[in-house]
Image (cartoon, rainbow, N blue to C red; front, side, top):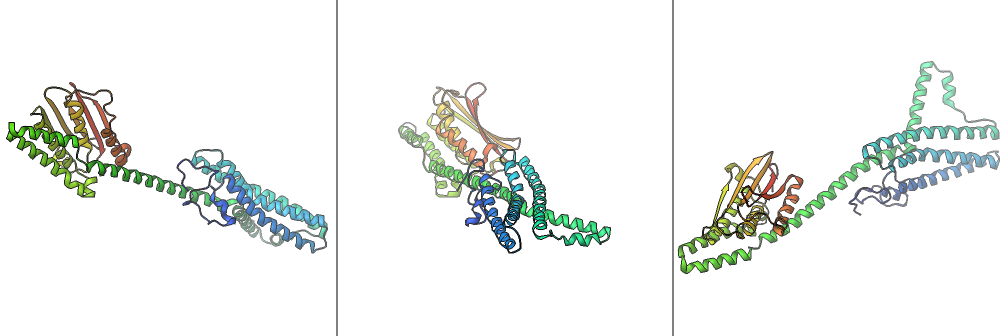
Length: 410
């Protein structure tokens, strides 16, 4: 069973958090510690055991010369006393947990509630013991014999004090264990297991998103853009008779571009990982093809320090921005155009910017599938530490900037 939202105190715990098996007497542990279902199941379990003990006590008492009413009263006090001892602390802790307070405050209140339960258990135990002792005196002529008290009356003061401390510590231990001490330990252990379970679910979800994203990335990289390829070949065909030298140069540029992309399709690791230098070279080869196709109408520059070219960088992000600049910036605008790619570091991040002096931003630009894929890749790989920003370029045109962390691979 999976839970993706906040922990509900009325729903069972995730299966990887539950401890104790699926026995009839441990099924209450399938619910959060100090929840209403957990308290009801625990009270039923302890109440049943205490009831059996009280009935056995009643049967044993009836063997003595006592009245039935007196024996029933003594057994009832025994049942109530032990039931309060075992449920007071957990009951207070359950109330505290249902207040819906922040976890840190809740933990403090749970511990204080158990301490209050120990105090209540002591008071109830003293009250029940007094009534049982009164019954024994009335029915049998003597009460409970406290041998420890008799011995301490004749002991030295230091021994009496030591005996009192030992008796107090023993009482606290008994009241603490019966009053929910083990449940407190289970409560904190449950918090740890819930955190681990939540972390596992988040990790599994992140891995699932990454696998899905990588599959889409692989499918995207496994196809060469038909429009780009067919138009390039058509341009080569048109130039064969007009300018054989330019046609040959365009074919060489296309081969260089395809040589840098197609071999990566056969290597899963290469398809999902790259360096900044490889991506910049891919963009340069693509732009060289486009320059030749446009008859030198397009000019481009690529600027990056050699130290940055070896940094890991997600594949297909930059080429998507460059294609976007060509399609929405350079092609719609007549005349010469220019695209500049620049990479630099600042604020522990790698920045890569693609700037064009084309038609500029227009309604709808920035919401296409290509840019949506770029944003998704950045989110899957780097989370909030990476971003894509689109804006107008100084002097006209548009610019797209990708920011990625320096301390993370692809």
